[in-house]
Image (tube, rainbow, N blue to C red):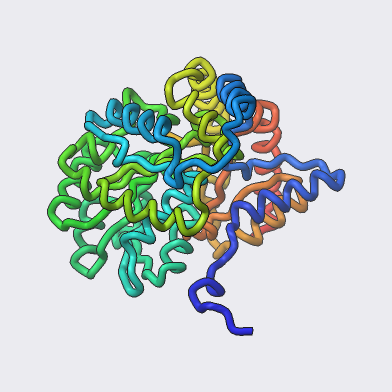
Length: 389
């Protein structure tokens, strides 16, 4: 049987693969600690659960408008208007089946076969696969830095790039572009006229002062070129509820809405009402408690890793990941490294090769203090043996 070239060339998600492998070994009785998870390890706030129960009791279990219920779209427009000092309307907002789905929808509107799209490197594993699915061509920063710069955008645009995906706080590194960097990035976007999909899913997990630096804060007039992607999954421990948001100019949203109408149709009705509760502020105490826990865990894992020889890393300013480089004089295959680490020490991690950075591993600190401490102990023991060299 003959299959479509773009679809059959897609690669699987390495993060899901390694998470599943660690889970399978643990289910079989192995002593496994997994720092692979890209999701909070907390329960969904009670306000969301109660809103979902109420929606079911009231019979809100049928189709909704394909772009989401109006109440949620309006709440999204209102909340992120305040965040970015904008005046978003309901026609600027769309609800999808998770932030990943939102990114895919928005990309499909602007990427034609052969289009070049600038991606960060390291990148979230799905970015290049999404571009490839549409026949686009992924290009990467010439500077080779861990974060995109204004000059990276200028050079990519000069070489034909029509748009970019931006991610700060970044998955996998947890790094954040400074305000000075963001100002230069905004200037480069304005100069080149490229479109931007800003993946802001970790925006509420920023450990610096005030609000995370953002393109629209640096230049509010870029709102027609920039699509914001966010959701409730990371902030409110609602990954399985599958609700994400896109906020962009009305035409971009309208076309994306048509795509969604002819693919998934509406997101889960019950999940939308659960999301409405937290977007409207009914779970702020839970949000703050989770944020405080992640910040404390960030400090814990970094303090422990600093005592491990053979690693080099930057302390993350956002998300719940740390991204150390393995120090070795020899070439290293981090996929083999992570498999050996899992099999020999029972520690699940994600190889940097999954994010386009050979030589690094991603550790999630969405785990208990005890698991973090034991995980670093196992990693230290593995590195001291030097079996990977």
